[in-house]
Image (cartoon, rainbow, N blue to C red):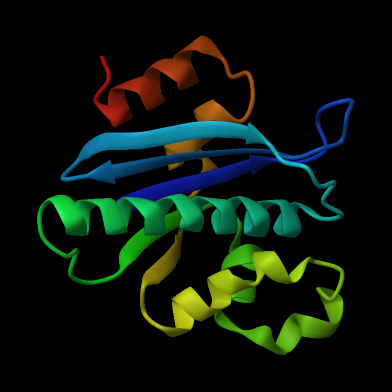
Amino acid sequence: MLAYTDADWGSQPHCHLISGHVVSLMGMPVAWGSRKQNIVALLSMEAEYVAATNLLKDVIWLQNLISEICAPIVGPTIILCNNQGAITLTQNNKFHPCTKHIDIRYHFIQKAVDDGKIILIYCPTSANVADVFTKALAHLKVQKFVDMLGLC
């Protein structure tokens, strides 16, 4: 299972972050979405971290569903994220004093990384297909992501 996550931080008048994600299985998208989150993030790193955590909830649900229908998913799910700060925060809690304001419900992603259930990997924005679910994009970029998703 492969997933992309992205967040649009601070570009909307309401200041709430917009998160987007795509989950693919065997190269085909099986779940995707866009959500206006109920929090106002203070940093872009925090917005991406919250978006990745919300994606993790969907990934866990999908893993359980697929395990019940077919067979257990072996190995970790790879989550591609375009924010290196958010990735670092999931792997190392040494930044805890700087992130005390983030609600505890968003920190459970750290346990999933520690348990080897997921691996977060950096993906540049130009290759992050979840970007199409977070903001208005130019036609060429939308077409590129539609093609990457196999939806053409």
